[in-house]
Length: 155
Figure 1 (tube, one colour):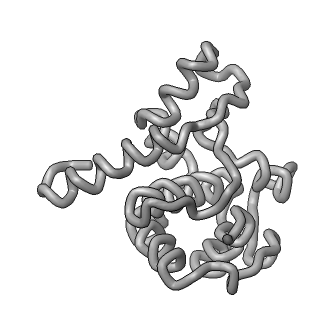
Figure 2: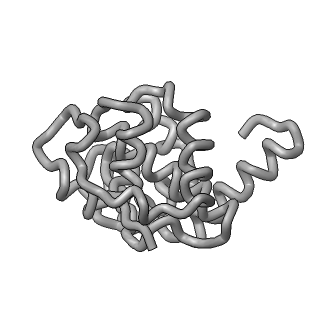
């Protein structure tokens, strides 16, 4: 199974330089859509409901203190991603890659997995939290997004 740093390295290799926050959000969207499409996790690492949206603490440990990341800054094994995983990531990058870090963060603040985790944690808007996002809620949200898109509705 691939790890979050493998996905992060793949994203950086595809899109080039970006902020650490944007990379975190793209990894989250890749994880969510892959979970809905394939009904399996993209990587074993979890996301937590941080103040600026979902964050993988494991990935954060790889870029802590860095604002901007370049290809090669996050070391990962691109060969750890199978064809279906790469396809999931590529589809997410085609849909979300043009958004900035703040746009992606604001989007996650409207979405059930992050909102529910923040409610469970009982924290104020900018307060720290390490509450995990639940796979069941991530799957439910992204599955509903896919169903809405398939029906021609806004997602």
